[in-house]
Image (tube, rainbow, N blue to C red):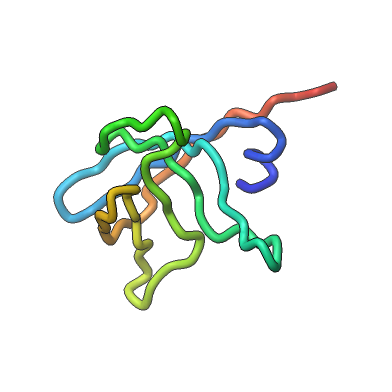
Length: 95
């Protein structure tokens, strides 16, 4: 996923809570400044108000919690436990 985003590709991800399923666009990645390791996917999440100035309105860590769920975080401090149901990507070929 990291290589896809850094290479100019686009991806969407389907998330699920107990109440609903929804799709989000993966608009970027967040790196640990010291290690350079990816820590979060940055999302344009259709379940949240859009914030065009920052390019994302939610973050999804790349690691799961003790219940094998991800801790989805909105930019206004909301949080949900979610699972990833599916994802799809479009890579851009430069050749």
